Length: 78
Image 1 (cartoon, rainbow, N blue to C red):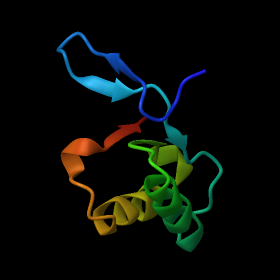
Image 2: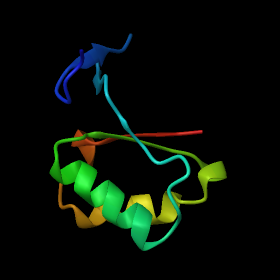
Image 3: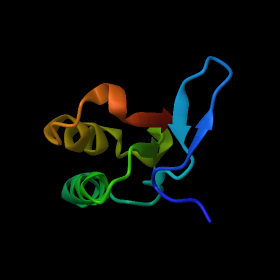
């Protein structure tokens, strides 16, 4: 079982967290903002979103407001 701190090493040597917080079907707005904020507070450093989910704006705002150095957060988007 993976923990929030377990990583995969990419071919360029960068480590990416094995476990990401998914935002599929999370409504845009305060719901996504709160979900991503809580995930970051609990230790997630990999946020998965997509243009098709319609919640990238709120996810991005939560990431910016977190004050966690952006280089320490992976965002995957499709």
